[in-house]
Image (cartoon, rainbow over all chains, first blue to last red):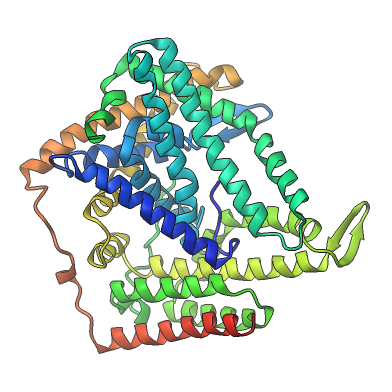
Amino acid sequence: MHIPDGILPASVCLGGYVTAGAATWYSLRKIGRKEDPREGVPKASLLTAAFFVASWIHIPVPPASVHLVLNGLLGVVLGYYAFPAVLIGLFFQAVMFQHGGLSTLGVNATIMGIPALLAYYLFQLRNVVSKNNRVATTVFGFLAGAGGMGIGVFAAMVLLVTTVPAHVDAAAERASIYALTFAHIPLMVLEGVFTALVVLFLQRVKPDMLGENDKTSA
Amino acid sequence: MIKLQLDAYAHLNTILHRWDPRYKTIGLMALIFAFSFVQDLRLLPFMVLTTWILFVVSRLPLSFLLDRLRLPAYFLLIMAVLLPFLSGETVLFEIGPLAAKEEGCLQLLVITVRFICILTVAIILFGTTPFLTTIKAMHALGLPFILTDMAFFSYRYLYEIGDHLKTMERAMKMRGFQGRGLGAIGMFASLAGTILVRSCEQSDRVYKAMSLRGYGRPRCFSEEFQAGLRDRIGLLIVILVAMVFAGLQFIIR
């Protein structure tokens, strides 16, 4: 999911910065409508750091273990702060661990951050049923987690397959995109289950963390 | 938690270390983008030479660079295994039923060199300036205050929250948690949830404490930086080099 430097053509990298810039502008505009936009910054920042750390938790999937992306959960908890959070998280990862890259920061932020915003909107649909309904929270938590990762994986595969290898025919490209995306389905399910479990935990322990976004969505 | 030591050599005294961080950020980012334009094999030696000159001037240790190249190299390894066999038409050699193609191999060479050069320039950019100074420079260049503040706070609490996670994992192990099998996922979800709840509660206290100390007043970091003629000349040279790379690639395309 973190495309490194040097892999993608410059036009795609620049396009990524344009879309990331637009998504950041949209998010900051929504945040700026709050009475005091700085009020939510410490919370969003600490949660950004917490998500960064939580993504290091390795879930055992015998015979190996995987770490989760958590962009869907990030969207659910942070709302409009999710895109800036993804941008900063990826910037840290690129600079500190060389995981991802500076030239591909815009692309990576787009393929992870926009699904996070979509996951936020998806999770808000649970309010149509009931905020306190455990089944609705589980279902929409699962959809937000699996969907957030699924859309990101699909976007990453489309970019990699269509821009990196030269002289590959369209049918082979399409087949590769589908094959690589379907190969990630078990991970999407795992991400969805994990997100649903965390969301249920938050609903039980600190439910205002799930409703906090409403304040920023003015 | 891994101690990041990103700016462990930011105290050195070289031209690159003394360069105004705002100009350095603009210049080296322009060079990174110019490198990402390069697709022609003939430009690769010049790209390596430019990167090597910058690295030598920065006086960063080679071990520092190699340590930081290790992790992303795994992704490159995957590309190295797949690209020669998937990309191209002209067969170069065959391994059993698999045929390595010339176009794929050449493309792998371009990607590898571009990857190493861009990463090295990025390491020079962030290795020759204290990290927080770089963020201040970005703010002075127009980064919105919400992103600047979020970057400062996240950086400040990253280690602390990482230590919380380590402590909780140790406590779980001491209470007999093995963490094996998919059944453990519920416990891991509770662990992640606890990290989020603790961070959220801590942020309330942090916000109140910071409000008392005057947080919220507009700040301006641009006064902290003072560029001289040398800084401007440095920027001009690097921008020219970046333009030459992008221009040459455009001409010989």
